[in-house]
Image (tube, rainbow, N blue to C red; front, top):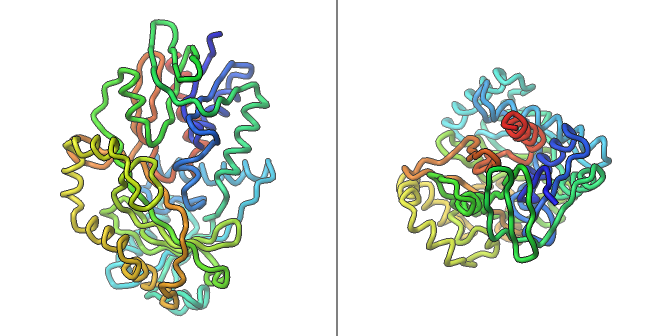
Length: 397
């Protein structure tokens, strides 16, 4: 059998793409190949569950547009399918004079992005969040929380209902493109399709190379470590609490996140990962380490971010340093409040010159489209990202 479409990757971007393809071409034959025995096991299943509003992104940029549309699409999808979500709002807290300046820049950006944002002075901040301190803040009422694994499970049911197939535990071992099809092989079998879309996240560069596509980047894993607060502190905040981010860094800083199950997490930091899928602390995949250590862009980006990287590593090794990041805005937290919680790993595309890829990165051939970088917040933006990928697929047909 030759399928119309094959998608590699059962995370939220791959699933959203499959849904959109089947919506545009009802009755199309489509198969999703996922190497794990469950969907959304990696980046999708290890994020903080936030439905972002899009305050951080440059006005008029693709990321700003996708995030805003994605937030609405995610909420609508959840409402249509009975998935629990909550629009709890987010407060960004300025803890010093520099962050107050950055806060004002963020406010101006939010207005240009058409977002409803309220400025808070120190007293208004205290009234909204009695356990949070700061010189001021920004309140976004549109930010929400959800369990993205549940979203993915529901997407999978929609895909199967529309005739799509999902094959789990299928690690791809070979990809061969011919004039009229693409053949994908695993230890469990092979599939032939007219079009291939690879949404492989942490393994995306390897699949592109496997398929014979020339790329100039490599995926470098960055580990985000979280903690969970004790149940006695589940009501410590009323909203999500974020620091004002440093615009020079690609990460948003350690934040307090209310989860949809009622718990509260703290994190993440951002440290170099010792493996693409090694979630336990100090767990090492020597193949992964050797691969990025031999990539010139890795050493360049490490050198360019040496100061912040050293601080993040120190805070990873010493819980007291990590705690201080939280106590800047939540001084009542104690070191014993930081309970174990599973880490996440971000697939960061890095170019040979050491620059971090902050935007979408695709590699295309006549019958393949490889999603080499789907920048944060990809989970929030997944539904319009899937539509954007489908646009490229059908335009190339």
